[in-house]
Length: 74
Image (cartoon, rainbow, N blue to C red; front, side):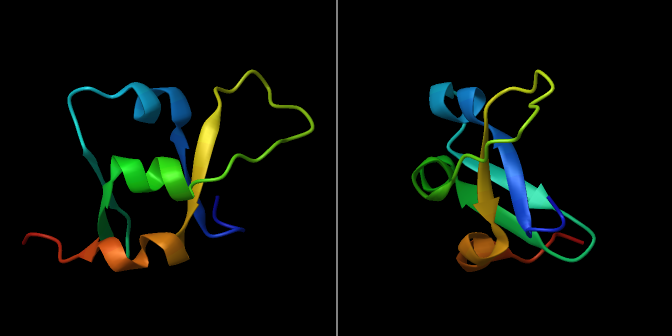
């Protein structure tokens, strides 16, 4: 969500993951490697008037992700 400076993640996938412990995000500016548990602990749910049938998402702010910033491989 660009306006609120957050990334949204499928909560079910994060909560039930058995094959990964980290999520890597890369956008036009920076790259992050975030532990799955941090996303579950610090993420927040947002409730929309009309969810349009979307799955439950956990939103994590860029401020929360800052300590997990990494240098992209070139």
